[in-house]
Amino acid sequence: MTTDYIQPIPDSYLGNKIRHSLNILEQCLTKYTPNEIVVAFNGGKDCTVVLHQYSLVLHKKFPYTNRKPLLRALFIHNKPQFDNVLQFIDESVKYYHLDLIRIDGRIKDALHQLKYSHPEIQCVIMGTRSTDPYSSGLNDFSITDPTWPTYMRCNPILNYSYKDVWTFLTEYNVPYCSMYDQGFTSIGDKQKTIQNVKLQYTNVNTGVVEYKPAYLLDDEVSERDGRE
Image 1 (tube, rainbow, N blue to C red):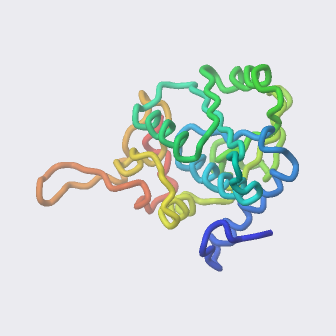
Image 2: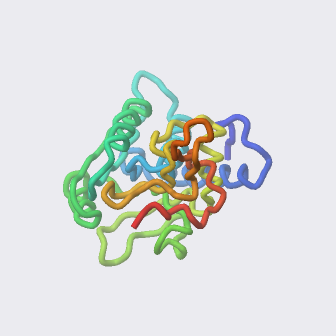
């Protein structure tokens, strides 16, 4: 496997995880063509990591010529979204030159619709981590459950911790949603998501209650404390 996507990749615990992620994405592009792959992208930190990594691998395998390689992303609009998140998704479309497929509705219904509108897609790259709900039994490649539309799920960051995600984003200057700098650590439904109280502090100069950025959260168990 080549490792000159990101320079330097440290010879460290996280560095080994990054190498593993790139290797999984290389395997994905061996099993499927770019036209058969889509990245699940809702503007969150985890899917931002995998979108960036996949972009690196894709452009390494298919260097720029007269035409950019096809980088598809899937945004399932299944809940009320913050304007900042929607803005970041729009910015990401321009930054990564995405072919964004947007489908409104519940996730399962949206995947059925994707089967109809884009039958060539066979693999969905996910920003899932093993600590996410119902994700502890997943592998790097896992087929969807029998009652769901059939897709291969590619999970390149399963073994990342919360800290790993933020170290990657900050060390490699990957653009991410601005809400994470406002004390949000996990962003979901805008009607059910608040800033994480573990990042709250009082500004000694103004007396105003403010929030530290998400990457300063030390208690990783509290990552989802701002979500119902």
